[in-house]
Image (cartoon, rainbow, N blue to C red; front, side, top):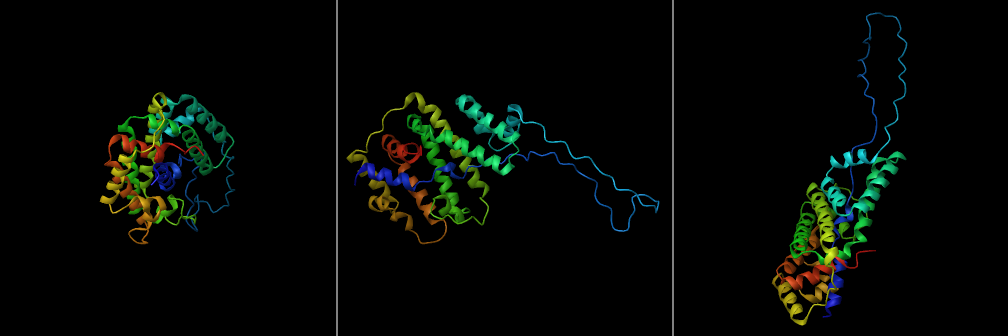
Length: 281
């Protein structure tokens, strides 16, 4: 089996954890809270005389967003750690992101659109730099891989209805919410990728092919999990275990376990294709 072909196939079948990434920040509105309506037949005054309605002035527009106000919103969100890391490690990209957020807030886009656009910008920043992750330390890459295995486990169990959607094999609208465990692991996957990028920029080196000995070790590790290289190459391994929702993601968890027990040099070559190379499109 051609080593490059095997890695390319694995690339095509492994989830990119930031695929469902989304910023959900607090609504940007000035809501006027009015007193509760009076019950029927209850007057606001003891007098039976008609009382003219009170006409309230329109609420003032929301205050103009600033970099400080956007950063305050983010600091209260579940993405605070990620954005703090971007500010520290990729300051120019971070400044552009905040400037875009200020502009779109002040243009009055709906909160859902605003959150999605922020997520898309973070993804664009990541995609352009993922190749540098190959130079990260083994500990950082292993942490990302372990998180991916946990993510596939979550998608194979409580997130089973979303498994095929996250793999890009089911484009029908989701009918169930994404479990918090899945959302948390996806956020961590995004953070860990950026950490690998920051580490890898000064250490990036070409990634070689798997040697014949490394391929044999990989085949042996797959066999321990009931898998084989031929099925991995064809994608047939995703059909093992039946057609129940979530099974393909559990099989991908198994694949991660098979890779994780390989020697450092071997798994780094495989992880390079799974997580970093060819992801800039």
